[in-house]
Length: 355
Image 1 (cartoon, one colour):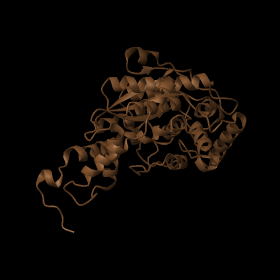
Image 2: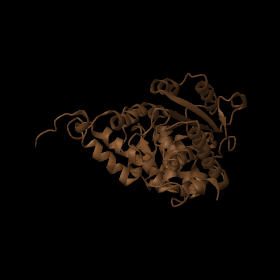
Image 3: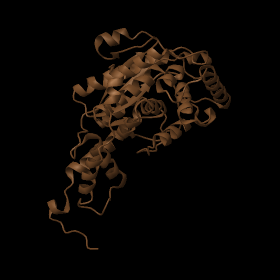
């Protein structure tokens, strides 16, 4: 059995008995019933994921998957492709948005080269970046498949390997983010395919496109779907036809975390496209996903609805990098602390409210 099949076979839904144990405790905490609202819902989720009433969330990591995209040649981004490599260097030098917000949350940033077109070998040799490239960027999906099916499987399996490595290093709470100029284009293609929605419904302005540029981007995605005909019943086929190496890596991290019963916080549009691929490969993996926020991209909202996820935050974010996931980790840890740190009425010897 290969690593992908092995991981998928290990993923089980949240445990209903542990969810009920968490609910029984939460019902008796020293506060009006369910007074902390959705945080208490999240507490139940954490218990169901981890099979524990004392879920561990203090050791946090945000995995930033980086890769390039051949579809940039179609003029779908306002930024040149070399910015991907430049931003990887910025992550390593702790100068990006994810560094600031992960630092505030007490989370480590793990940068993974899944297929950056520019040279990042020196960063890999120094240990600053995990080097797991599938190739030097994908093909142009508007002219043919973004990658082979074998490359799609490799990208997912590389993500699983990252999740296992980080779990072995002692991390309890995972988040996913990305860097890849042009990657809102394949993400929108994935979301359109797996949700059945029109391309125009799920395609946004990405790096700040004007109306004409947005219309062109929509046309490029529609052409890519017509050329490639991805099969919505086959997650690997969708990834291979119109995906990205970092999107496959994100799907793999999600699958790896789910198999290990670790909660994983999903960031914005691109990360949620990866989450859709993970769900297509293993539907139960969605039980371990926590939606960080609702972004400005219309496709993100559609994807979250398809996953059945209500995001924790709504702050008009559209940066990516895992920034929303880092922010939401504070709330995930708070939900765990409710289970761990708040006493029941009996434990605190506080009188129960009279009906």
